[in-house]
Length: 254
Image 1 (cartoon, rainbow, N blue to C red):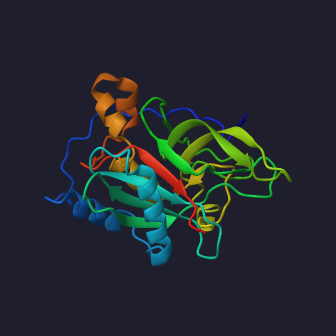
Image 2: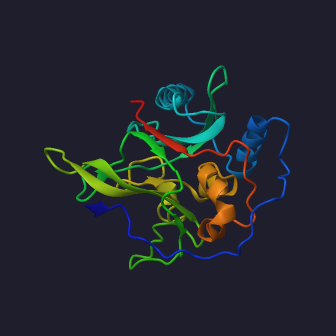
């Protein structure tokens, strides 16, 4: 077994559940969440053809698993000049319209370097069974804050089978799969290229957006009233979306 990154201590926060109505809220939660993304994350859109292919692949993976309209994270690990992307998307059963609300650069597992793995393709369910934590923001001996600045959210998806990226004959081994931010000075500018040991890296702005609006935290929101550990992990200034979901779909469009 090889961990993607070593565990950091959970940084506590006051036990305050988010109740305030966000300023961008509207009668249409999809439009509201899209407006929030543009205001809080922004950035250039992903190439339209790549985004469309990623959404089609994600829909195929998730259609049978979504019992209500909800947001999900779509990670495209394709290695080509157009780069690697992470999309915030919405989908649902029946005639619900699937669409991408916003996109940002991402990094997944890197090939050709010892102890680096390919981020596994497939559906990841954030079901609340594993408690995530928050970064301490402490730099390592090289001055790198690998999980981002203090209080950046880390989503822990547990042990997952992943393909080795450095062996002539690839093998399937276990890694601890995480979703997290990265060093904003040294590593965030490299987002868009394969760079991790197998985990999913996103920008600080994307991390805060996912955290604030509970994009992957539907199970956490349901458990928070009776579980102090989960309630403490949720951001006290959070404004959970009615579309809060629990799925990440990792695809490869190339």
